[in-house]
Image (cartoon, rainbow, N blue to C red):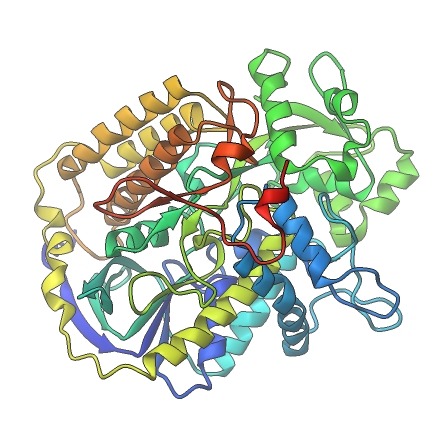
Length: 570
C-alpha cells in the first residue's frame, strides 16, 4: 500500500476560479473566455459527467415571444414569483426571465439540441405551474445534451480544467478573495490557487437526505465554503422534494424522476394501497395544476398514515389508456422499449413512486450582479438563493443556470479588471488538510454521513414540527462537535475516498444545521416548507427572508421588490 501522510503542494495563479462544472459553471467560463482574463474550471468529478445538470430529463423553461404567442418574460416572471410564494428576490427573477431567451437561443446556435417544429421554431410544452407552454426540450435527456454542448464549447476555447479536484477551503483576506485550496484526488496533491475572484457554481445539497434524485457529489460544498468565507446564506429552510421519484422496481436507463413524465405526457393514475386516487379526490384537475410542494405532502401523508405501497411509496400507472395509446405515447426516447428490457411493461404494470429531496431553493445571498458581501466572491446556479423563492417551478432550473452562470462571469470580469494584482500567498491555510491523516479518532466519515442523512430524512423532511427540528439540531450539533474524531484508515492522499468523505461531511453538517435552524425559526408553512404545528402561511409576519452569516445570529429582511408589491398579497 502507498503511504503518503504529507501531500505534495502545487501553486497556480488565475484571475478567476470557477468552482463546479455543471451548467452554471460551464456557462460562466464560456462568458469569461474572451475577456482577457485567465480563468480555470475546477470540478470535483469529471467535467460533463458530474453534478445534477445531466439528470435534467425534460423541461427547460423560457418565454420565447414567437409571433402569435401570448407568452412573455413578464408572465414568466409572475408565475415564478407566485409559485415562489412571494419571497423571491424580484431583481434576480427579472434578470432570469428577461435574459433566458437570449441564453437558450445562443445555446441552440452552439449546438442545435432543442427539438423544433416544422416552421423552424423551437417546440414548447406545458409543465405544471406555468401559464403557457414554455418548456423547450430534448427528450428524454435535455440536461445531459445541454451540458455536453456547453462542454464542447468550453473545450473549443481551450479553457484550463482541473478534473477530480475538490475545493476544501477558500482564502479570504480583509474580506476579499485571495485564493482557494483544492485536493487533486488522483495525484494526492494540494493545489493552492491564487486568484482575484471566485465563482461558486457547485449546485445544491440534497445528498443530505436518504432519498434523493440528485447526483452523489451534490453535498453542499459551495454553500459551506461561502458561509465559512463570510458570505450570507438565506432561505435555507426551503428544500424541494420531488413527489414522483421511482422507488420500485429500480430503473437503470432513465433518471428517478421518470414517473412524473407519465402524468405530464398523458396523465396518470396515482393511488394508494387501497386503490384510492387520493390526488384526484383532493385536486380534480391535478395533472398540470398541482405543484411539487402540494403533491409531496399529499403523498407523504398517504405513506405515513399506512396507505403506502410495499416499498415505501404509492402507485402510479397509465392503465386507463389503451395499449396502442401507451405504446404510441412512450415510444419516443425509446422509453417504452427501455422499460420493457428492464421487465417493466407500461401496458400491464404499475410503478411504485415516492418523495425524494430534489432541489434546494435556498443558498448564497447575491445581488443583481451575482456577487456576495465578500469582495470577489460570486455565485450562480443552484447555489444561490432568491430566484425560486419558497418553491421552484418545474423546468426553471435548466434555463436559470444558463442565465446566472453567464451573468456571474460577466460581472466577475468587471470586478477583476478594477483591482490590483493579488500578491497574497494562500499557502499558510493548508494545515487542516495536511494533518487530516494524523488524527487519532475512531469515527469513519461515512458513518457520520449516514447519521446526517437519517436525521434530515426523519426530522427535516417534507413535514416538519418544532420537536423534530429541535431533536435534529441537537443531533447535528453533537455530530459537529465530534468531527475532530474522524478517522482515516487509509494513509494516503492518492485516490482516497475516505478523505473526500471527510471533507464532504464537514460541509454537510454545516449546511444541515442551517436548514434545520431556519426551519425551526420560520413559524408558518410556505412553499416547500411545511410545519404541521403552523400549517398555514402567515403573510403578516413571515413574508420575509431568513439570513445567516458566520459568527452572527439569525437576521430577517424583506424580499426585494420590483414589480409585484408585497402589500397586495393576501
